[in-house]
Image 1: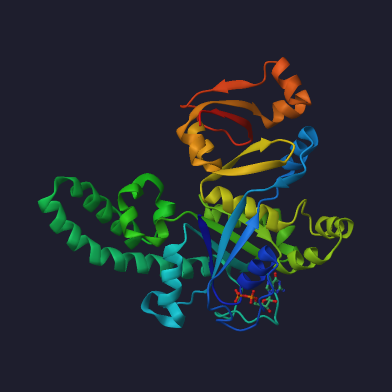
Image 2: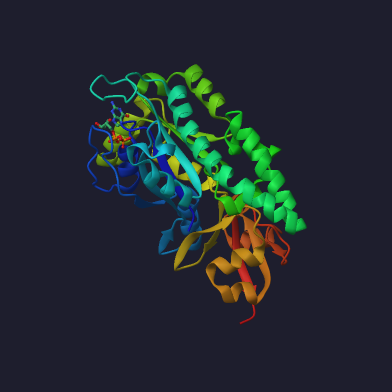
Length: 358
Ligand code: GDP
């Protein structure tokens, strides 16, 4: 399954966020390199639609989709040259499908900052620079090889051209993700370039930042087109200990409508290019994970490969239409249930029943 690699400078709160995400009990320690071995956390995506579906269908349980985070630990300046366990970190990042960067925006004199001050944009630049330098090293080796290949095989020429364009973009200080369509990244998959992966930012903030709209807007603009989530890792930990009522009060006091971890799980899922469709019956109401753009047979294949092979059609109603109608029978009577064929591209929140040959 696809994973997001959690990266960031030491002491920005990576372990704290990761532990809150997984409720795992790994010690968050106040010194650099506290987390060396990568840990994988499988996190359910909170989805209130499942509870509604379970009511409508009388389902015995709900099964949410999940998203996987890998705790990769501290990158420092010089990681691309092997400093601070740099090589190991970079190898772990290369294996992740997206990069989730935790950035410190909280003030706390008791927590040491590696550069001696809290400066989120400078921290982001430090990490990006290391990833950019590592990608430039990869290209430095790849381009001469691609030049040779392009001389012998015509179809390698576009790959070489894309590699040269990527080199230019990186030399100008941009990540490939931020460069958007200027580089054809589909041609460069074989190089596993790190800055080509989708980025997601987690701003680990304190109350002052969480309630400061202008500051948040400034940080969001600085990382666009990447998605970003604001949370207070310490508050997230406290929330895990509280009952629902007290948790709601604590969230309100810091101006948030839901736990930041919920937003993070959802944002991670979307950053990976994933979406869900829903099924429901007496046994369970369930969210299934597919890629954005998947067709109905591909979606069926997630349940069982036989479903994809024997696909005939899909009976589909949007979640909103189903809830508005109140039951499947009422949705059908109201003409809200569609029969879709093998070319249908799934939409998020489609409630589906597949028809297939076995
Ligand atoms: P990592 O090195 O990035 O994994 O950072 P840790 O998660 O180990 O956190 C480093 C220190 O910062 C620990 O003492 C945490 O308790 C503290 N910390 C983490 N998040 C926050 C936060 O949101 N606010 C404050 N005040 N301290 C935090």
